[in-house]
Length: 269
Image (cartoon, rainbow, N blue to C red; front, side):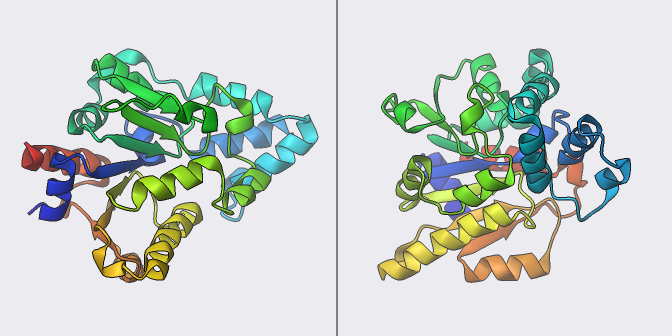
């Protein structure tokens, strides 16, 4: 049975969607391993690094920027190889459901334009927000798509190298401040993330800490993380931060997100 608090929040447009790489991977976006393999080739490094579980793509991207003098060539390669054909996006049920669910605010850590393209293909108006200047373009009743880790249209906005990542952990950029304001009184639904993602865990912890220090923790709206498979350890840790983990038991991981969004859309309708 779908969680009634989540259904009510989505129906009343009081929920924020937070979309990660798993959303774009449903339409064939390359994995981070593909990016690591490309950097290893470009930098003429030992190919074994690409299969080494200790290889950190943030650190490797930092090395790339130091050696190449700029992240620009890597950004250009990603832009070319992470673009999904419009017809494939039009057929993506996951993207169609995200548009249909009509979240007033969508945050994403993805660099690609797949969400924006899906909204355009399904005739849904949106405002893309990449920096503080874009915040002034927000319009009442128009969905906001906030690119928290940057956008391919702006090299300086991309959070891909280690320095970028560590700078973002300060949680004090204009978009971080906007997120704290947006999230304070709304339900948040995280989809397309792995619980091993330190960045997202840090963000969840900061949200919990903000509410705890406010003295009104009991009034905090519930928030959720959709997981492709059950993880009792992760679920217990998230629960202490006031985050409820949702799964689709008995469904193959590659179909789990679509099944979950289908059921949510049906319940909201």
